[in-house]
Image (tube, rainbow, N blue to C red):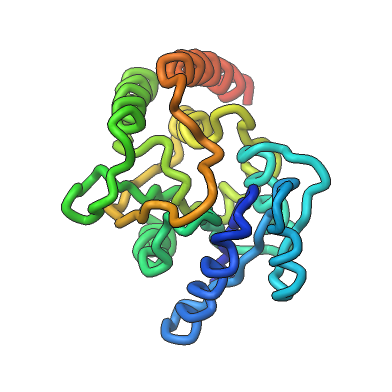
Length: 242
């Protein structure tokens, strides 16, 4: 199977080279061989320079599209290059490459269309649990996904996820831009795709600043919930028309 890591990066000059080197080391030791593409999302630091100097496979966006636009660029690349599985993998070093095989296995075994790496499914698996406010936000979003779709997702904002070839095609055509992780999950659940979660360990970022900030957590949660409600209605209407 052809497997691709999609690595969105915005101002990650402190982290991206280490992330790519970890992937290369993993490929040397593992039977699973992973291709990867870094989507440089209009970074204003030296991310582009690092990518070019180290000849890292990348797409360099002229303007900052945000996480949704950057990730969809990766899905378009995966679709055009006929990959069987695409894995979202952060460029900040928070995701552990050693869990990629576990995330891909349910897809290879045809047990799931999407698999999400969750730091909350088994808290013993991951020492890093993120901030209290972010956990609170995830719990509330998770509750609304369950209400809207009847499925509990413990880590709805996790960017560590893998999808099969059919979903690669779907996301290459449409991928949410505002709140991509929870919105895309609602999209798939409404359309009766199967989502599984696998417990993973995540790391605290070593450098740079996260592009997702929860300083205005209540405002963020309200907007995410409203977007999911609108999405669930919209996706159900589209499904009925098919």
